[in-house]
Image (cartoon, rainbow, N blue to C red; front, side, top):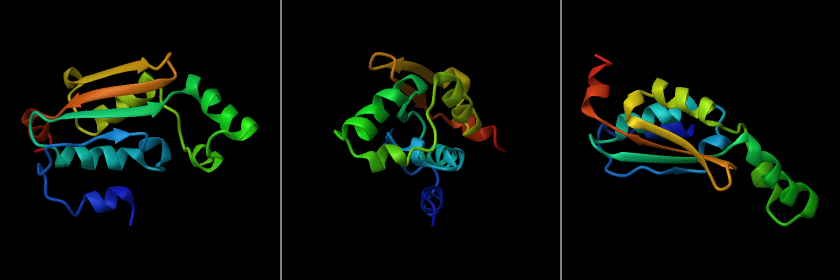
Length: 127
């Protein structure tokens, strides 16, 4: 069963906490996971996400593949890097309202982070 498939077994609006730190870059279908996480969040919950961005790709690969300082298997398993222009549309498609999404680059602009807030209005849009 996929990661998103496991999340579908949980009841809607049942989570007070969700973190997605260095997760979606490993998924072939991140959209389904983000949509399921949003479905699980109670109103008002803040959902932080962190992913490597394209500029950080070289800084992850060089120590892993050339120097052997970090686990090459972990970097080899990345499916995607995300800049703000890559991540923001996925979050909107997952059902977060644009006004409730804040995306930025950090760690010397090598990572992309987003903070989203779940709200009841975004759930009502689905009806």
